[in-house]
Every structure is written in C-alpha cells, then in structure tokens.
Length: 388
Image (cartoon, rainbow, N blue to C red; front, side, top):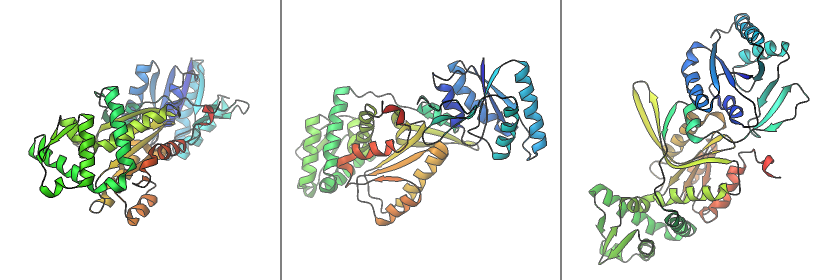
C-alpha cells in the first residue's frame, strides 16, 4: 500500500492533485496539521473518500517549537515503518519550519520525496534523484477546487439545446465583433430588458426616439431571427425569461463560456468549466453568496472570468477589487482572474487591473476573443505534455 503524506497550509491544492492522477499509486493520504486545521482536513478528506482514497489526520503542535514538532513527526514515521507501508512525502505545502522538519525526518528513512512545481504542474523528485519528472494529470473538478477553499458551489445544469446554443454563440460573436459600433444599441437593449425585470413582465414599449435607433434595430432583428423575441408596432416581447436575461447582458457570459468550450477541444489542460456558478461561503454565522459568471479549471488552477456589459464609470474599482478578492479567497496562490468588458475601459481601470494582477479583454479585443482566451489559458502552463 502506498501512503502519501503532506502538510496542510492555506493553499493545499497540490496535496490533492497528484492523488487524482491515475498514473500515481495512492491508497492512503495522511494530512499533517494543527488542531485548528481539522476543518480544512475534513474538506480535503471529503474529496478523497468518494474516490476510494483513505484520508487520515495527524496533529502536530501549533507552537514554533522545532523539537516538539520533530518528536511528533518521529512518532508518525516510526508508526508508518512498523506498518511496513511504502511512504511518499509530498513536500509541496506547509510552513517552512514544519516542512523542513518533516523533510529531515522522512529523508532519514530513505522514503521518496516529491514536490508539485506550480507552473508546469510536474511531479519533481527531490529523492531519489534518478526518478524522472512527470506531468500531473488535470483531474480536479471545479466543485472539488472550491471545496478545498471552504466554498459550497451550485453548478447549473445546461437546459439549452445544442443547436440553439450554437446559434446563441454565433449571435454573441456577431455582436462582440461589432462591439464599438453596436455599443449604444446594446446599452439601450440592456435598459429595455432591465425594465422588464423591474416590472416583472416580458414586453416593453419603445419610445419614438428608441424606435429610430439604427443599432438597436439591428439587434432586435437578430433576436427575432433567433426566436428569442418579437418586435411589432413598437413593442418588444421576449419569448421567455431566459431570452430576457440573454438580452440583459447574459449574451456576453454565454459567448465567453461557449468560447471556452471550443478552446477545450484544442487545449486539453482545460479540465472543467461552468457558466453562472453560485458560490456560498460561511462567514461567522451568515452565509455569503457570490456568482461567478464563468469559472474553469486549467492545469489544476482556478480561472474566474467576470463579464461586464455596462460601463465601469460608477463601480469600476469595486468590480476589480471584488474580482481580485474572489480569486484569492476561492483559488489560492495559483488562481487567475479576468475581466471581459463590452464597454470601453478607462485608463485608470486598466492600470488598477494590472496592479491587481487581473487580465483584461476590452471591446477592441472581443472580435478575437477566442485567440485572447486561448493565449491566457496557455499561460497557465502544463501544456508541454500535450505537444506529442
């Protein structure tokens, strides 16, 4: 029986990903942590148990007392030696004084020791030195990833027929490619769809001025031809609530998600993705809900994409800070985030996004959305094994 051992820290994804690799033998995982990390251990165990990997928790002192930490680790190593278990130590995680103490203990037993390199996502062997590095398979799913960081998630089931989905993708591409020209028309369409939401109905009357908007007329014709809405005698009627939401800005989220699905066919490091993920986090006695417009896991790293069809003048900083915060809270150190904006961005917003480490796709780049997303996902690393 192969037993993996690793130390829990605030970003323990790399303790889980090698265990999900079908090419890595793993029957048992022992997580080392303090009593305060019991809850974190239980989240990790909940991912492994359904996959028939036995999880155990081994406590060490929380104090920075190397002698007492070494003593506990010596006890663990002696027990494992007595069990005649083959032990692999995953040295990817853990505070430095705990990690170095554990390395010293396990090294004296000549047990294999490895780290998962963050960018390439390769299993690199510290001992023995003659073992060849290998790529870790991209198998962790979106819900599992969010669970690791203490979030409960609801992933919607797609109810859109494939033919209509392709039609909506094509429509979204057409609108995105003409983002700068159609901007005013889409802003008006967004306003009309919002009016329907506020009045809780599916039809809205256009003012005489709105009826004369050329760009809006193009959009209404597109909606009519797709069967999402009808426009007669100055009245716009959406076919159903989903159609209203599509016109209310969801067309951009749909476009981005459909583009991610298309890229997945040529970039196998994209392992899971979803549109409109509801995420719940417990903060004290209350549960806080957030929605991720598009979320995907690429090369075992969480990627969050925020889609915005309205201008950023009033809430630009809030949007960017919230995106940065969700990236760090839900995805740890390796997570990445992007803002896809249909409306032009101010220089201030571009500078702020760069400072926060956020990627940006603005209206000028929307016509080449697939290219820009592909390059961003490729920059997540891990594609070397896909060249062959």
